[in-house]
Image (cartoon, rainbow, N blue to C red):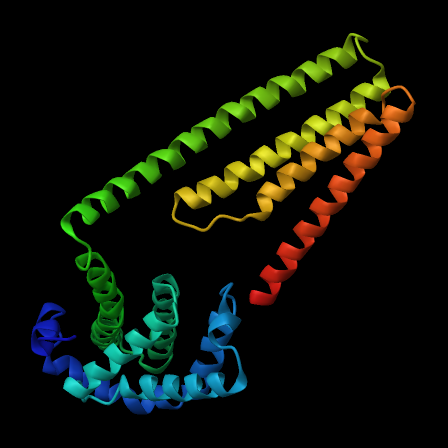
Length: 304
């Protein structure tokens, strides 16, 4: 909860002069309310999980009404306990629905840019304009700070509820997980280098007629598939190392690439019952993997 409102204002150097300037902005920014709402939703619609948080029309209308109220309250000049409580409750709602703080920060960045753009258009005097921008900037930062307070408190509650030994284990597991990610990334680099060597060896066999040209090209294509799959896996691991999620589809892609390479090589072997069985088996596995890949991608698109 918010314990000291005045201390928050003091920390941000938010004075009564700032309040008076912001109140003067109210008639200027109010006329841009509809434009703000329209551009705001266009901006957040680019977020990958946008539809996950605004799932239906009723929820959208309620959010739109709350957004309008929040925007108008920015210029009310009344920043008392009730104002801060409303901000904190908004933050709690964001936490409860699982909205990432990244989206909150990005949205506030848009709000800041929108307001500054309108101040630039409406106020010609440069010094006066700078004062208005500074004052509203402090208030926007305070809003963001209070909203994200709910996120910080949730993390503290979760962490504080752990016992001493559990916290030690938690910290150790987290650091060990980071080490594992680092080792995996390093291992992928080594694997990629080996695939490069294999690719070069395939070219060598083609150039010096160690294998037939047609067979060499097919083997080369299979090796390229493996190289592509390893590259994709490295990209996903780098994203994961930076804190992002991990796409399960990449594992299916690697399996597909490996099986396609096997199918290409098997198609070059001598004809016979064994070859037919191998080709049918590889084709069936590729079909199954393709269906799994399609189902995962389709499910992911529906969630978005």
